[in-house]
Image (cartoon, rainbow, N blue to C red; front, top):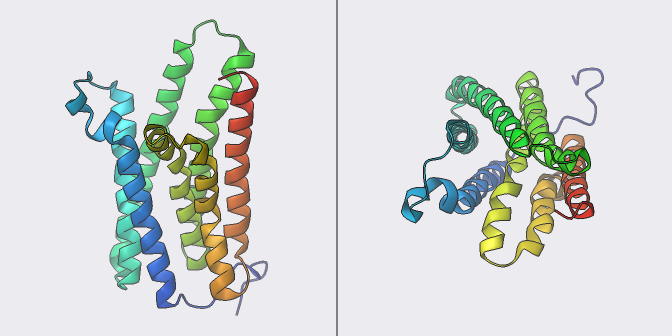
Length: 231
């Protein structure tokens, strides 16, 4: 039986194609994060740049760990190693907590470095860093709380992974001189699960659709607000 209030949130057991979709999305997100942050984080030493502040280093390290853990989690589910998936899930949850906490420290330090800048200029920059971090935290928390409902759980976690994409593709696309494609690419990733749901199940899952709309709205507000203050 479907729990009361859960109608519209449940799909039938995931077909093999769904496992392939989630594994492919996790792998692609990991590749893009690695490519985007290679010059400034993963291969920083090759450029002769100095060491990163400790909070930035921790933030990048635990963020990388979470992305890799997410990829591992999708593989464990696809290969039916559910017990390991559940055990590793708590490690991923701890990494998410560390990522959010270190992100808050990095954001606070960045805001202090702005000194006496007017709030009309500082506010959109605070939103740029704070809103995605909050979205990630809420999506992961919701995913943990909904772990008994796999259809909801995995869509929330994939959306949380997608939240991490804009900084990576922003850096990567700037190097490739296609920065104008950043927003469209992010939107494509955000709505990818809703599109898959529509193709595979005949309708988008409510979490996939509403989550994608929220993430794209946050990024759209960020882009528009920064442009309005000339940043």
